[in-house]
Length: 298
Image 1 (spheres, one colour):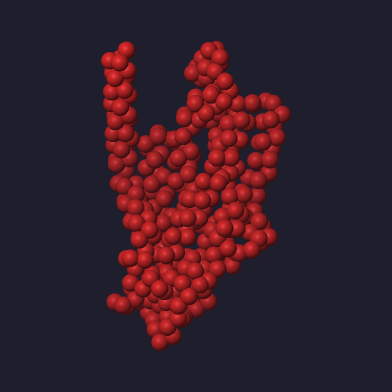
Image 2: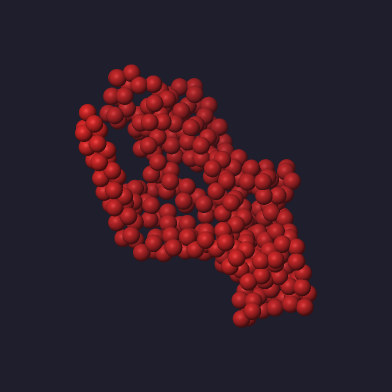
């Protein structure tokens, strides 16, 4: 019995290694996806160690130095300085912290309920349970996510926490729709039918049989959504409903710099480029994950 279990464990490990190798091969065949992953890892590293790698970490908060105000890009200030003398490069790196925290927390709050509701609605297809869940989902999806998040954020105090709550309130619907579509298809597969025949519980069928087969598209959509959440969060900050000054949020920095265009162009252009870079990195990584999981559309 022990030898049999050992053989099964070795076989499972070998199968996982082959699966990982095959997935990495599919991913690495797309050079742009590898580039996106490298850029994203560099951004995450810079955001985590921002106090140690930025030239002026004190500029990330309440700091003024009017003698160095509105300086163009130079060897000392590679992105220039803002209207009160703060280094824009330092503030951009610290701004990545807020963007990454926002996207991670929003998806962590919105994915679980969306997945659970999608599983339930798909499994109980044709019942009143499906009708209620999917009609509520359709109402949320009918309204553009930024508009709905804007309405929710406008009713709350402008800060990072309320910004995350506002976006999470509208984001779960996309995962509900995705998982619902996949569940309605998977419910007719042989492995689900066999699980029902042997007396498996509905919880077991939903979370041990159906959900693992949905993880590929969920992970891919999650990667692509990281960039979209950052866009929505930066847009809310741009109009004053997100992170408040003097904290170094990218959307807030663009709003402050836009008031001084075109003379002090660097104050708005470099934070905007920073947003574009992180969104592009997530999109390139998501394209690579599509190849790994052989997904046509997410």
